[in-house]
Image (cartoon, rainbow, N blue to C red):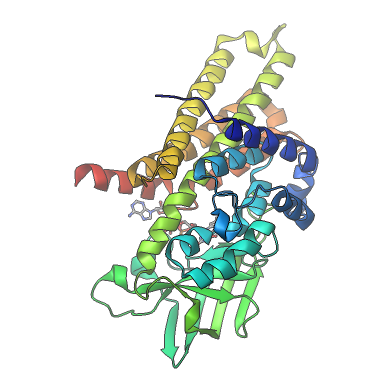
Length: 381
Ligand SMILES: Cc1cc2nc3c(=O)[nH]c(=O)nc-3n(C[C@H](O)[C@H](O)[C@H](O)COP(=O)(O)OP(=O)(O)OC[C@H]3O[C@@H](n4cnc5c(N)ncnc54)[C@H](O)[C@@H]3O)c2cc1C
């Protein structure tokens, strides 16, 4: 077994770290406070080749892997998780287009994403359908001639208010006996009549990222916007989740690493009872535990990503990486804040933002509970 990264991987990791430190570390607090983002940072990241690194060369990408994407995600999230979402999520859904789309669709949608000329998102969750997507979805697309007519709403959609097009998970055959054959993936351009997005404010964390509620009121799209086959939407959604879950786990590792770094700095300079906090064994155990958990999380992420890049989508391993890293970062951020004492409770200390940002990794792309269900089902089958 060889744990050495390639030169290309080391270079991209270093470049991502330098980009994050140079381009957005001093703006993270502002974006978090004001719930905003500067699109110029996204454009620059795309120009430098950080966006959609897993997209194949024939569709405009550099044809690297999910592992390289995770390395970038981790470095960006170590500086700010919300900004990492704002920069890297505009290709969210490209995985489905690349795996299931027609040649014409791949050539139409993918190259502008890599160049940062367009923004995409994936709209699956609805106000009443989150974990139980297949069973509770209610948005419908009805075929009329050469068009689909879409009605319904979506909730919590990343880039909903900034995307040019959204990959939407919609019911096309609500009465099909098999609940996993009722849905399809349909691309919806956001300038279509009847489409509306409302930006959601007041999120706990990742506040630089755009999250929106969507409504579809008789939105007409041509049937050629169907991605893959009609009725195959659930399988396509699972493919999307599998790849994106590894990215979320990498994001968790980045936040946790930052929590450890902030804690080490703080406990060395803060004194209590005449000694630095770092001299107390209770502090040392926290630092040692955080290091161990981060390393374990990193190993899960890198292995899951490496396997995908070598042709195996191991959904059990991916679910393990996502659920472990989500819980791990919440624990690490809590310990980091505890070691900061009252100062950790203040917005001017980064650890407060890390504590708030950490939680999202247990929620989106499948909650921790759903990941455990996936693993248990596979193990107990
Ligand atoms: C900031 C943000 C960005 C997001 N971006 C996107 C996006 O771009 N696209 C998109 O489609 N969605 C997005 N989501 C939605 C996200 O994926 C869902 O919130 C998530 O899947 C959980 O669904 P829910 O909120 O409806 O919770 P629910 O499904 O209502 O779950 C509530 C709780 O019940 C638990 N639960 C549910 N079922 C079971 C069960 N069978 N056994 C045990 N426990 C269970 C869950 O684990 C959870 O703890 C985003 C969410 C947020 C907050």
